[in-house]
Amino acid sequence: MSFFTSLSGLQAAQTDMSTISHNLANVQTNGFKKSTTQFADVIASTANMNPSQMVGSGVVVKAVRQQFGQGGFTQSSSALDVAISGDGFFIVKGDEKSGNGVAYTRNGSFQVDADRYVVDAQGNKLQVYPVDGSGAVVATGLSSTVSLRLPQTSGTPQATENVKLGLNLNAGSPIPSDNPKFDDTEYKFDRFDPTTYNQSVQTTVYDANGNALTLTNYFVRETKPSDTDATSSWKVYSFVGDQQLNAGDDPATMKQFELKFDSTGKLSEPTTPITFMGFLAPGATSEQVLKLDLTAGTTQVSSPFSLNSTKQDGSPVGQIEGVTIGDDGTVTASFSNGDTQALGKVVLASFTNNAGLRQLGNSTWAATGFSGDARLGEPGTNGFGGLMSGAIERSNVDITEELVNLIAAQRNFQANAKALDTASQMSQTIFNIRS
Image (cartoon, rainbow, N blue to C red):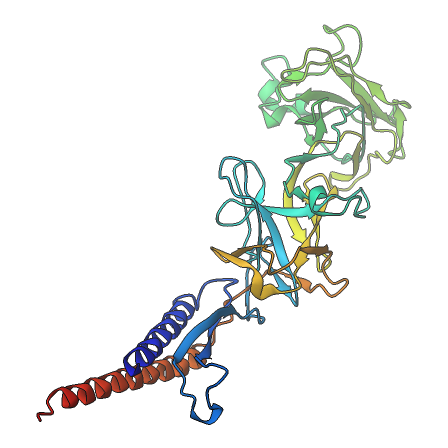
C-alpha cells in the first residue's frame, strides 16, 4: 500500500510543479491570472474501523484554482490600451468566420483592424453599449451590445458660398505697369509672374463634396492719387485652382473687378459683395457660385500689406484624428473638422465565482455553470472597477513567491520519491529473508 501512497504524492507534486511552471512561463503575459494547486488527503475507512488506527491512503489533487487578484499596470502610449482597476472583465466577440463566441478578458490591449473594428490580438471585437449623441446609454444587456467600430468621417459637407476678407493694401505700393519691364510691351497680368501684381491672398474654400479648394485673389495697383483725383484704384484677379473667376456675365471683359479708395484710404467701391459666375469644381457636374465680400475691414493706408480677417461658410467632412476612452468607459472620436462623437460605452462583466470560468487561452475565459451567468454593467458603477486609459494590466504572477513554491514542490517530490525507495528496500529485505 505504501507504494501507491508514495505514488499519489509524486503525482500531486508533479501537478504542483506543472502549475507553477505555467505561472512562471506567463509572467509577462498581459491579463494572465495565476493558478494554485489544492490538495486533499485520501482516507479509506469502514464503520467498524477504530478511528485511532486509521492510516491514510495518500493525496489527490482537489483543484487547480485560478487566482484573480489584481495585476500591476504598465503605462502605454496607445489610447486604445485600457486597464480595469478593480473587478470586471472586458467582453469580446469573435466573428462568424473564426467560430469564436462571447469571451471575457482582462487584457485591455486593443487595436484597430482593416475594417476599423477595435479588436484584441486574436481579432475578437470589443463590445460596447450603444449611446445617443449625448453619450447616454440607450440599450443594455448582452444581446444589446455592439462591436466597437471607428467611423472614417463625421459631419455633412457644405459648399462655400460666401467669403469675407478684411485686409490692408499699402498706399505706397507701385503700379506694376510702370515697371520698365513693360515699356516695350503691353502690360499683361500673369499670376505666375510676381512682377505683374502687388500682393496675393489664398483662402481655403470647399466644394459640395467637402473637398478643399484654394481661392487666390491677386491685387494689382492701377492708379494713384493725383492733383485732380484723390482716389486710387486696384484691380483684383480671382482664381479657384487654375480656373479664373468671372466677376460678371461677360467673360471677355469681366476677368477682374475693381477696388476704389478715397483720399482717407477708405474703400468706396464696391459697396456690396462681388458675385462671380459659376465655376466647376473638379469632378462636379453643376456649377458652384461664389461671393467675395471685401467691404468689411478693407483699407488702403501707408502700412505694410496685411490680412486682418478671413471667413468662409463652407465646411469639409471631418476625417477621424483620434479616439479616447474615458474613465467611465465612454469611447469618443475626434475629427479634423472639430467634431467629436461618442461611439459607445465599454461594457464590463462580473461573475459570482470567477474561479469557475473556463480558460480559453490568450488570457480569455468563457462562462460555465460553475461561474454563473455574467452580470453586466458600466465601469465605476455597481461594484465594477474603473478604467485606466493608456495602461495595460500585467500578469499577477509574483516570481519570488512562485520560485519559493517551486522549491517546496520539488522537496515534496523528492520526499515522496525517497519514501517510495525506502518501501522498495523494505520489500527487498523481506524477499531476502531465508528460513
